[in-house]
Image 1 (tube, rainbow, N blue to C red):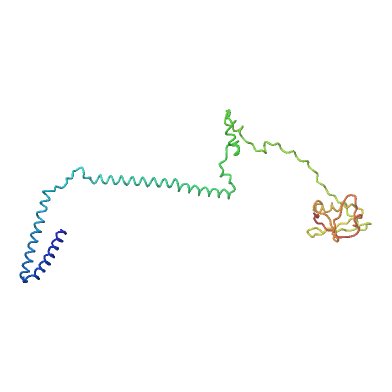
Image 2 (cartoon, helix red, strand yellow):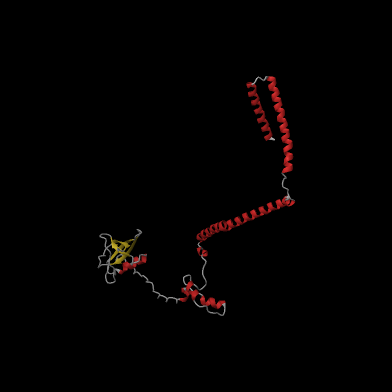
Length: 278
């Protein structure tokens, strides 16, 4: 329909231009020009009617359209069934992808997170040994590959096998150490302080490292070991501490043979308890 309209419009425009040029080049008046246009329009109308009526009949006689057999027509139910089957296949493919993603990505990720939480928890509680897999009873971790190469021995029962393979701690297999001989503690007994009016009596004041001062009376004939027993009685062991003079600072040599008078202690004086010089 659109093509016929275009043909008519083109024919009308052509006739108009042809008539216009003919009218200018000839002596035809306006009336003759209108008659010419009318005849052209009638001719075009006749041609159009002829084309629209004759050509379809010629096509129907000459060209026969292909016949559609019933089996070529697909019913709607079959189309719907195929669509549903395609949807199911697509959904099954998506489910397979989701399952593979969960198994290969999500589950390992969750296991790693859970393992880290367990390690942190057992480290905080001090039970980190629970994270180890352990080993077979009676088989050390380092000797596992050695024991696997040993020939198998038949045992009467699993209990006998476990008893034979059990690895006892060294504290059980080793003999207990021999008891050390009990050494008797030294009991310090100081002699009685001499009276004030006794000949050769003098007072010694000991200044401890804490600043406390202890006083006691002695006589010049007593052994210097009495001084060492005195500081031991006060809580200062002679193996670590000794007695020094104030000025000049020098340690006192205390032995059983020397007396207080031999080392110059014959009058009241102040001595110092301090650690031994290394």
